[in-house]
Image (cartoon, rainbow, N blue to C red; front, side, top):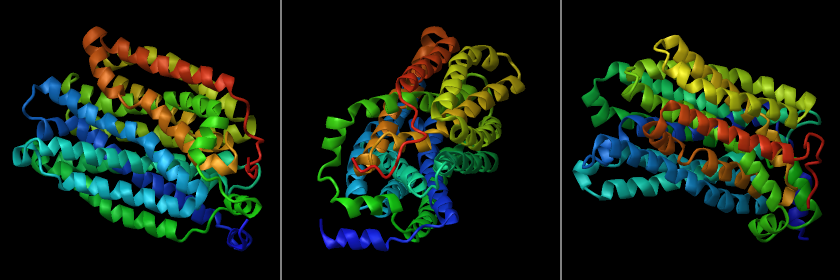
Length: 436
């Protein structure tokens, strides 16, 4: 054990609650802003701009496939950034993941379309989309650890809620900006250059996130861990040799969160505009309204999971999500805007209920020496199951059997998560200072 590790550990100052909250929320808000503007663009313009040589349906399917590329990259990002997060610390790794995500997002906004550079356009788009996924793969796990490893006793879910609020804020910012553009620009202007503005603005937002994170100190839990022993050489190897079951169960427990969010947002937006006949601005406005319910559910579920435990909250949320799948067809085909708004609000409220406890539960599943890698791996592997091809499969399922099939997809993902949660032990009282 080197004196460098010991000195760093004993000298590590504590972060204030305000600083932890700000860095956690700002970082994940920016990351999900970056990620969701692609989901919105995929539903609206990516197909015509980068795949114009195909039919309208093929354009939409190709667009959603590029959307899924990032979810394939996310587990690789969790392994890459998790390795350094468990070896050199949470702070530096979080800064690097934010930079990668921001650079790739900005470059997508500057990337010429198929009409300008031909086949290179979709190829480079896929490369940058892969980079987005790598960055987000390392983002959430670090933000969750930053929050929970600074939390006082009995308040880990409340502190773990900070990064969970980020998606709601990022979603509102992304959707709000697209809504303004939809109102301000005509279709030709939006498809020509307007859709690029949210991507380019990411560069300014990343600077804000970097400022917040560079002010942080290393978490006391990580500092204590390196004071006891040197970090593990290859966290990923130890994780899957000794802790593979919590990774798989944690990933399966996340499936419902992803399915609720991306079916409700990316798929529903595309379906609402192309099939239900809503204008872009109207449906984006409905989504902005609905995400407020996700923001409301997040702190309520975090408080409940600190009081009653992670499992009871997640079980209730998963059961309600199973039932909610059966409401998709009747509400979206009801013919009234209030029914559509009700469905969107219901699904995103349940997203908040099932997502909030994850900020504490996934880090609690793993010892400190592999916690960054483990929490990130579980979180991002869940994305492959619940979200990577969700909009793509939903488009196929509608063609096969209508919206009831898509609702069945949501219910199936929720059932998978319910079974996984039932197999997990309650983690509320786990000791985060446990090294191995």
